[in-house]
Length: 279
Image (tube, rainbow, N blue to C red; front, side):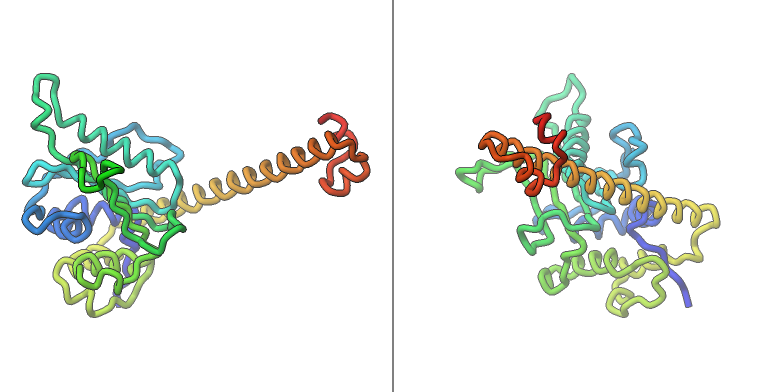
């Protein structure tokens, strides 16, 4: 019985979408907001790195960049955990790709749209149950007026429910593939295997197709993700602790302004007499 690797891993993701243009075309056509007459027919890979390596984020994002037969650019990123900096990275990368199209001597009319697609393995928008987020530059008073050039799509994989987009079969299959295929998967649903593109992607995930060196890289990636998550968690907890201390100090200041006795302030804030006196 074959064992499969997780396609969200940097190594596997790039092997699927960075080495097999037919699969990338299917993936982009399924998930991007393209009109039927604007679908991608072929792609040309471009260098994936737009910014210098940041050691703190080295293993958190996987990129595939390409240009299609219409000249449009697409940047695909797989984010294993959410941070607010991801917005900035997406905007920076897409904007950079847009600017790099043009040499100083060329006309702005030659610029082609750039699309950013971010697949997120964690939730970031808790205000809605929607998992598919499409962003454009629009006129707030008339949303039909759109400045073309940059577009972004963010997909929250954890929220994804197939029934919500049942009319987009390939989008459902690709997102199911990313969500259901995890480390050491041994059984794959027949519906996924029935599609030629998904079947090919599943075959690429088979553990037996990777060298010992690649498998070591695969495991190092997960170790790095766990380390980064732990560091973020510690930072978050420290931030919350600092916030609670500041809240106590503010309460103590207000009570002191009202000439309340230190003994009472101590009861309400759990601060020491010295801490209260220094306020």
